[in-house]
Amino acid sequence: MSLTTVLLRPGEADRIVAGHLWIYEGAILRLTGPANDGDLVQIKDHRQRLLGIGFYNSKSKIRVRVIDSERTDIDVLFFEERLRSALAVRQRHMPTASSFRVVNAESDLLTGLILDKYEDVFVMQISSLGMEKRKHHIVEAIKRVFSPRAIVERSESSFRKFEGMEESNGVIHGTIEGPVGIKLNGLKFDVDIAGGHKTGLYLDQQVNYQKVANLVRKGDTVLDCFSFLGGFSLHAARAGAKNVVGVDQSADATGFAAANAKANKLDSQCTFETANAFDWLKARTHTGPHEKLIPQFDVVVLDPPSFTRTRSAVEGAMRGYKEIHVRGLKLLKPGGVLATFCCSHHVGTQLFLDSVLSAAFDQRKLLRRVDIYAQSPDHPVLPSMPETEYLKGFAFELMR
Image (tube, rainbow, N blue to C red; front, top):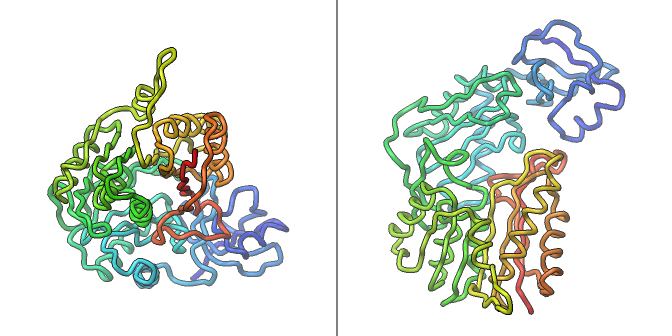
């Protein structure tokens, strides 16, 4: 096959050789010929040494997305092999899971493609033009590898506009009617594939749901802020919590969470409230003059959506994290556990930890760290590409 060559500037090749898969405009010396947006191009350093092949897009800040280190045909067989390789990783690290992320974009060497498995229904997100132009190959490969009941596209990502693409949503294979029933760690959940957040559920917390539940003692009272479909709530209730309060601003989410609790016969232990979590925390930690707040909870879980998607908004995000940590600690009984999470790539682990320690200092609280959390193994991380790591979390015991 004849491919236009993208030549990199001196010094720019090392990052690609090390395993980073994005090539920005400023790294490019020149193109040896014309290239249409979405075309496959070959990548060479300034000395004409082959670095790989990738998808070109002049409209994107990421001019080339590397797809392979060798010249190869990007056809159905290529995607089938990549899918089988990605599936093997999940089967090795999450052998009992039946719902999980099959493809995590760059982490599985399929830049711009996300594929989530909800039992026999698959949800696909495409955020790069190169993948968009090969969607028919991807769909056919999914059919060959998984024989799915349905394939749904949820390509709503804001990244698509940076690639010059419109949103694309809908069932593209098979049929689904209503919510899809799945199992996470043995618990039943109904998931709104068509209208829920992301692809329907936050699968990246699947392992952490159980890890946090392992810290719950029989008879505990638990607060689950930003509870969504009740992942942490239901796991805590199954672990023996006598009273779990879930708070989320989405009435649809709390409705699903309540139904999920009932389906698992945990509804007598779980209550879900529709409210802005910040407002809810503020109202429950307000005290009048000479009034002392009595902590109510043995476990507090804080799992908010990302407070920032850009570096410029990090400062404001950190104020938000500190506020929920301050108020969460006020509601936590001595000896209790605070489990807190951040899903923003732009907020580093140390910065997030600092927000907890700053809140503890202001409240004159002493914390002992008891666990560290990351995204589940079906959301693998490429250390050579920091953008693939975003979820971090901690559990602390309140000593005093």
